[in-house]
Image (tube, rainbow, N blue to C red; front, side, top):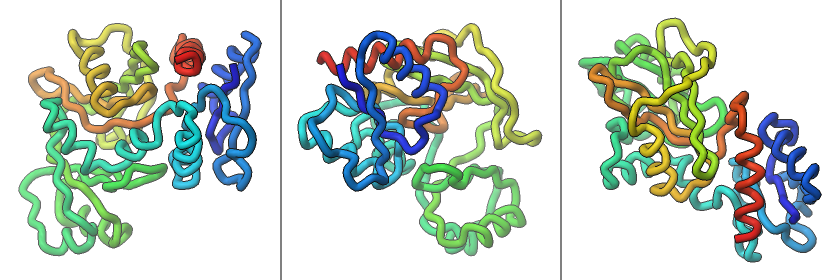
Length: 262
């Protein structure tokens, strides 16, 4: 089999480990830089793994799909997960426990006329590297963000009291991996990632429902446990890093071969 990796970071630990396993099994692995003008040249591979979420990466994926090549995740599914407005609307319609999300437009314009009665979380509408994700407790903090990100289209979520730790769930095919990570919204700031040997009942199935809803094969789901212990989904990511999870490279290699054969 020939497996193509669409990425601008070929040294990523998960991709590197999965590529090593595939090569050891006698399969060909090709790196495609989405910034290269001839990235799609030649006969299509049997399957592509889409790790680059930039406009060139998505356009490359679309061009390969038009040639009939399977892409994991598809360009359409990846694009959907970059729009937090559409993501939330789809989740609510499906009955998933997703954080209430409202779209308010450019941050500075919204901040100028709003009066905060309780803490909120402000996020860039369009998910990308180093986007805006911040807890806002008062108008002073909101004014600071508006000055730094005046034209940024944002969504707003009501802050749900929680332990300050995110449950990071990652799925590769049917395999679900999990860890705890101190939230960047906690008073202490972003913290370490800790093992989570046991998930609350039903959370793995909830994660798989997310994958089915968004047509994702490799994805991450950020969940917080609310005051009564029930899960609340606060974000979904297409093809996250899934770092330091035993068995993840093996799962990704197996998924690539399965999709190639399919």
